[in-house]
Length: 384
Image (cartoon, rainbow, N blue to C red; front, side, top):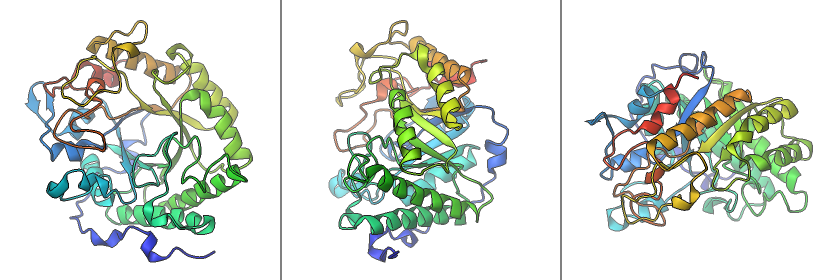
């Protein structure tokens, strides 16, 4: 197979960050954990550098430590291939990229120092990847399928090798983000000719890279495959295992947002148990959230609004807490491995994305509009 030429990769060696000793190994963080309580904190570094602060009981504290203190044992972080847009959105004031390798090193080091495990979410794109968009990185745009398969391996391997060399190996890795249609479209589309087979080759290339670096590491990274919404899981995993020959992974991960799912919270435990029984894999919710208010803290329109309330869960801190507690109970009742909340620290600040300044999610965070930890965060310390 033709090996990937160097210009298709992010130049991983250009970043030189101080390597601090990691005091927390996998066995200390997750080895004795019966259930994973995770939080996606991918925006945190950017928010901290653009005016945001986090408080607990009125005192400004490190956000990673706040989540640790409130029961989190894992942080999920997304990584994009070459996200130059995260710098460009600031115009002449832009000095750095976010969610690239350099930013991920900073975030993982903060996680490890706080005693938190890490789930590294490879989007295999320069920007957001999800069910409606799985764009090939610009550097790989002209690659054919064979080179693209090798690109996935080389990029995943070099990224993880760079992390492992600095004591920053993640405990979990996602090969793709909400890859319902496949990743790296259009070549990786599950619904093109030989689509499931081709998608399987791409995924297996990423899996092999994780296994190869894990063999060099004291941390034996677990692999997650991630699909949006529980109603799509069984069909997709049947296809990718039977036609794509993808079997070497530990965890079925799915997003559950009641706003976009046909599955009520009362049926989640059954879905989780069914997935475990059918596929003989661990099962986790790797993305979820619920709002505590319909109000805004800025002019950036929120994604969740007053019309998205679920019966029995009013838009209040107590309603958010009860939703998260009941959802966690449902996962546990089904034999699930854990839950990860999406961007519960995306508070309003001067941070920017492609669509606005501030946050479109501040009403779904675990912080009030004074940036104080709210009651919803308490679901992780609930006595289940």
